[in-house]
Amino acid sequence: MLNWILCWSLITLPLATILLLASQILNHRRNKKRAVGFFHPYTNDGGGGERVLWCAVKAIQEQNPDLDSVIFSGDNDASSQSLMSRATDRFGVHLLYPPKVVHLNRRKWIEETTYPHFTMIGQSLGSVYLSWEALNKFTPLYYFDTSGYAFTYPIARLFGCKVICYTHYPTISLDMVSRVRQRSSMYNNDAVIAKSMWLSRCKIIYYRVFSVMYGMVGSCAHLVMVNSSWTQSHIEKLWGIPKRIKRVYPPCDTSGLQALPLERSVETPKIISVAQFRPEKAHSLQLEAFSVAIKKLEHYRRPKLQFVGSCRNKSDEERLQNLKDKAVQLNIQDDVEFHKNVMYRDLVSLLGGAVAGIHSMIDEHFGISVVEYMAAGAIPIAHNSAGPKMDIVLDEDRQQTGFLAQNVEEYADAVLKIVKMPESERLMIATAARRRASRFSEQRFYDDLKAAIRPIICGSS
Image (cartoon, rainbow, N blue to C red; front, side):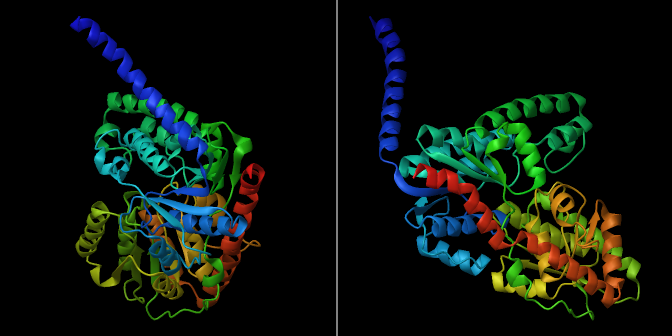
């Protein structure tokens, strides 16, 4: 009798759970709200992704004022008014009205510290759990992911939402698989794994399995917007839905920055570096290159390197401190400044005083800060790959617009060329760079995004 009851329980309990969940989902599907729900768990990261969020919110408010804007945020202190103020103060984006906020309490499931190993799959599956919480609390007509959590798309489809996403970069790319195969050590490929053939082979299998899963969930999106030629080529191969993919260059504050005068003080040439203090941004390389350049300048006017970025968490704070320590080790601490979590107006002021802007991330999917350098009149020095190489630092009317580099020596040479450059030549390159930057304006983003979403939102309305 006891065995029979146990067997019956093993059968009925899972079935009852499934029926209960199905009932909840059907209820949410029937009661969807006329709103666009923006899935953006980190509304305080201060990077280009957050700028895209606020510009996307503004674009939809302009295009469809009858739709509510709802932010799924994991920041407990976020409120409708504080987020609206943040959009203005940090990014200069003026929303038409404050967005509603749905607070998420389970954001820890997408934090990298939660998964010391198998971080990529851990965060992806964790995002499923987080999106389940989000959609149970509020089910919008349109689910708009602006953070790249593709594994949430099947869940949103399950709740009856139209799925729209803005993809800054693929979670996994063919380049990542290639580096593991070549056993190259990088921020996303530990040196221990790179040195071991067996571990490298295991990781390749892991990447291939993940690629298949990533392709399946990504294909659930009704509309995919990508930020660059590089991202588009990878997403088309991985997700297999080229007709649903539109390239929409990210919003760059070119109009405001283009008002800055091109003439700069050359008494102490300033080189600015704008990026979050994350490992892939390769700030250490910039310090090393700057140190090499200073040694070669000898008695020439001594430049100053200004790091400007935001810290999302304790790990970013530690990276920032490590950079300060490294500047001391290289004996260039008096020539380096660190500006953390600055307001937008202060960023504009710093950009307006820089003769050059440096950016060193490998395979940067686009590179908003590179465009901002160019718009502000600072000659860019960017990594010779992906977005900067394919879309941004290209000749404009046969005139050079900046420099591309790959290693410490090449970055140092570019710094030396700009610091020693005659003012007339610098102004010529800066003028061409500014013209090039106008291709990636905030208004261009609004126009392209509205054109992309119109068939989805207006059609279903």
